[in-house]
Length: 321
Image (cartoon, rainbow, N blue to C red; front, side):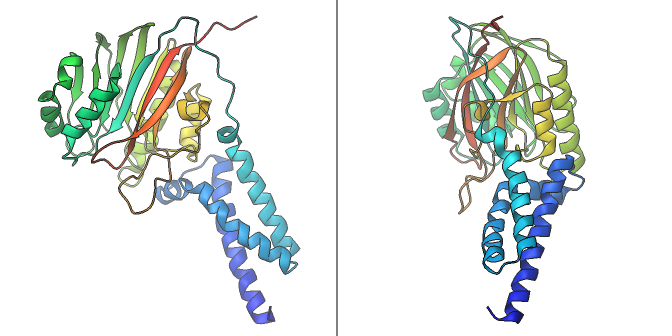
């Protein structure tokens, strides 16, 4: 390699290393101070791919300092990703537990294929349905479908654009005071097959649309987790991934992510309406208070830009002495 070209390649390599290393430092520090940082953090695992050619070229051209730096940053990324690849050992469900099946869907507020969504939900037949970006038009369309007869216990908070949310249940619910979040949230207890189960449904705003609301709502969710005293699931489109420090603070607050616990921590739920495949998981079911996820399955939502999922939650087996 010619000397001039080699210097140019080395400088480009250092630019990539400094950029990726800077993102990794925000992860280590648990800092998301600006909305652009939140956007970049969501693609953290893909940034690591940029280090591979830099490391290969650095070794080939014997730029040992650059190669060592690449290895150090890459190792830090692997440590950060370890909980996704090697999830914690969650307790088993209690003997005889039936499990409560909850479907979570971000409908997309402009979705005009709600009849197909209702057909899909009718076929899935969950015990509870959580609907984000729930508008009056969606409510009207769903109430005209036979699905409505199977879910007589409904709590609807319709809203404009992405602000609405709803929970439909086959069994009675007791409604609590809803969290004071940037967009509508719901807090209620469902009379499930294994006993009362608290469901907190949230749709956190995107950091691009409402950065302070995004930060505040994730902190509200963490406070809910720290204060939880019984079986509870926090569910919905949290507009945050494992790669956001604010989301990992939810895990530190005692929540367990259903997808990660099932060995699917690297799965993605958004976007589904682009020419490229989904690359980040924004939709989550987080359990705490002696509740465990025993199963979770993703599915495509007609007319939406998100994948939905059905999660089964059940009381955990008592800890053995």
